[in-house]
Structure formats: structure tokens, C-alpha cells
Image (cartoon, rainbow, N blue to C red):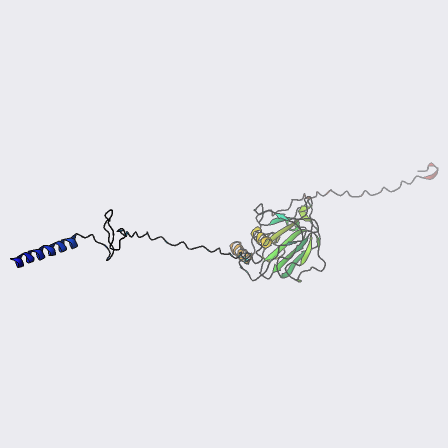
Length: 292
């Protein structure tokens, strides 16, 4: 009987232990997460306490920014203009301020306005072709070949002919066949030819070599202002040779004159009829003493 009672007591004690273990709140081993009972003390005599662990959210640690001294930019690199020719050109007026038309007026040429006495220079290396030192133009005739007054032409090494007209003077020593270099003075600007009633200027024209009798070719076949702009504003290698050859192929090397070709017609002088001289009458012989 006693042994049966002990067996029942052992069974009850085991059930209580199992039930307590299952009912314990979960947590970390050795750390209770149960809410403490007021007034309860721990085995050491201190009030029972619980530990609650709260993990903070992950926050990126700010990285301090270091001030960077940026180097100063280098000055811009001067890129040379595109080289389209092996020849080097210069603006045909040297040492003076200029203005000029950049549009077609009557002929494919331009008038470069500059002070009297300013230098007309060779635009490129070449050979002097024609030199006219005498101003033959007269308003009564207005011959086309004389309209540019005093002028010099140069056949450049690029094969192009350049004309500078309305000159006041031709530079000393300038003659046909003379070898000249770009920038060499050929004459002084004036207003000879049909520019005598205007301010001083340079008649500037681009063409190709022809016979001197074809003066209408000499006075301009290629529009020059794009090349003048380039030579004046920083592109000394822009060449008119390609355009010159294209125009020559289109018109022929010896085209006819179509614009401002005729001179002023001159009246034909009328011949006055010449009178034959009258024969003098022979003297009358008067007899002496009334004799007949």
C-alpha cells in the first residue's frame, strides 16, 4: 500500500515538472524573458529582474568628405585652322584698316576701301605678270581695258592670277617676270582709272592667266570675299585655286565678254569740204598817155 502511494506521488511530480517546462516563456538560455512578479526576489536576495534586448536599426556610418583642391584649367589650346593648301596667303592690303563688300554687285570682284598710299601686297608667292604704270582711262571713252587705271597682276604659285587696280603708284622695281613673295609690296593704293571721283580703294580680282587682250578675264572671274575673310581672320591656307579651275572649266579658258564690254561710242568727225584756192587774176595793163 505504501509503495503504491509513493508511485502515484512520483507520477504527479513528473507531470508537474513537464508542465512547468512547457509553460516557461522562451528566451535565451540563462536569461528569463518573463515579466517579474512584484516583490519576488532572486536566489541571491535581490529583486528578480528581466533583461530585454532591443537591437537598433542598421544606420550607415557617415563618411567625412575631404575637400579636394581642383587644379586650375589650362588656357585653351590654339588649334590651327584646317590646312587646305600647301600655299600660304596674306591679305592684299598691308598696314591699314580696310572695309570691303562681301556680295556680288556687277562683276565677281571686290573693292577694298583703304587710305591713299596704303600698300598693295602680293597675296601669295608668284611671278609678276602685267604692270600698267600709266593711267590711260578717260571718261570720254571709258575703255574697258583702262578702267582699272594703274594695276599689277601676279600669277601665283597656285596657278591663280591676282589683280590689284586703281593704284596711285607702282612700287619701284616691279616689272613683268619678277619673282615676288607673299606680302611683298607691289604698289600704293589710290583712285586711278574710273575710280578718280571716289575715295581711294583697291580693285581686287581673281582669275587665270590669259592674253592681255582678254582684259575682261583679268578684271575678275572668281568671287574673292570668302578668301579675303579667311586670310584676314586666321586661315592663311584657304586657296581659290580649286574654285578658279572649276569656273574656268565651266566658261572655257578664253570666254567672251558679256558684262560692261563696250566703250563709249565716239562720234565720227565730219570732214569739211576743202575749197580750191582761187587763182589770182593777172594784172591789167593800163596804157600810158591814154593810148589803147
